[in-house]
Image 1 (tube, one colour):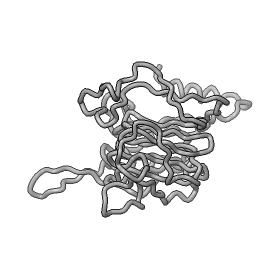
Image 2 (tube, one colour):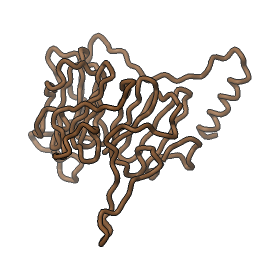
Image 3 (cartoon, helix red, strand yellow):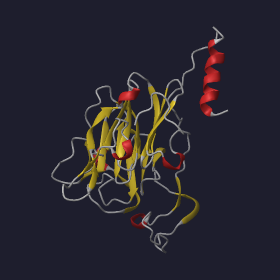
Image 4 (cartoon, one colour):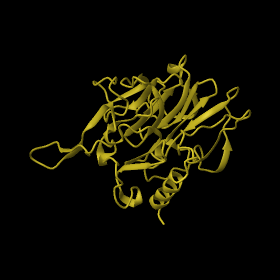
Length: 290
């Protein structure tokens, strides 16, 4: 019995009992313990990670087990990194942001492109308490506690939203991402795209459309040259609703390098984008985008 069959049987059994409460899924939530410890492990040679080069050096060793990373006087409440990125974000209980790792596109939001070996406070966001963040390959999303959304890093693929200065290819200081009237409640970042759930449960996407990761029914592929084959992909800098999930209340979303997934309040999981290596369903479920 596969997962879809199990889900159908569960709903059928529930409908047979008039006393059964409606099945609902809530957004994931974590309580912050009184004492928090930030630990890291793995590669620390940020500029060479994922490039096929020898990353382990004496000055930037591979950490073979959890190592405590101390931020004096800071109670860490949230951390963000991903398989797409070579940088990390930590948020304090008061909403302050700290960033470290690779920074060649300004993804750390520190106003420059210098790599940071350890946590450095993102002073540009002081005065805006943050509740979450998400890291893409060369960009970062910053979620304000009041629903404000900011982004920093590479802007040429639309990853940092429509406020980016079109005269350059990056925003090293976080810029506001407009277009979400209800305010943002959850953020996820992929290789070069983002998913955002607003406070009403609507799912939005922006960035590169390669492989159909934005869920808008196209991969945006086009040929840049009439005289040769030079493929490129359309970008969407302004957040757009994922059309086939309109009307559903979404509670969770996640991005891979070239695929996306989201869960609605009824526990249905939708996937779209690159379906290779088992990342999508064997066949497209009804209602899935892409």
